[in-house]
Image 1 (cartoon, helix red, strand yellow):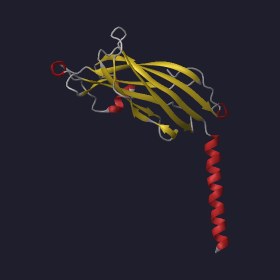
Image 2 (tube, helix red, strand yellow):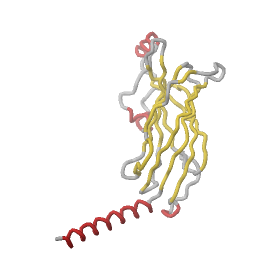
Image 3 (cartoon, one colour):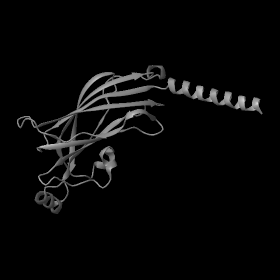
Image 4 (cartoon, one colour):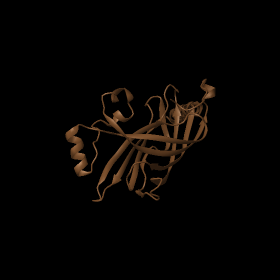
Length: 208
């Protein structure tokens, strides 16, 4: 019986070692950086919610923070309409294929004069593919709604919301939406990659 237990332990250790070796051989992507801030929203107090999206089965979330929210910040200079967050980003992925690439989806919210949190815009951008430092501007938009809805939003100082949040990152389903521009979110990405070339993948510039 003791020998059988030792054999089971040995088999389990061998399986764990094989899994660890397989994971080590997988391409790795480490995303560092900051959500720097936002501009051109025409609001005084803003905060941002963000989430990294990567297809399950193609990318594994290994370590880090894959969703979060910045602090509420106030416009510092009326001339440039810039809100500063400097919220850190740190997400570590492994990949079984580079057929797709991670995105970061954002929502910017403002605080109105009554202390209510109201949506200011939606946006999505791909994580840069090339290793190194990148400054990225993500353009945000918001649903326009019909005439009655626009009148409602005007008098109550509110914004239309999407019923299905996946529309933000699924471009095929957005052709029937009426939208308007909302502002910009500014990112700094520091991209570290390993093992892609060994898998036959050469990383060049940004994903279009």
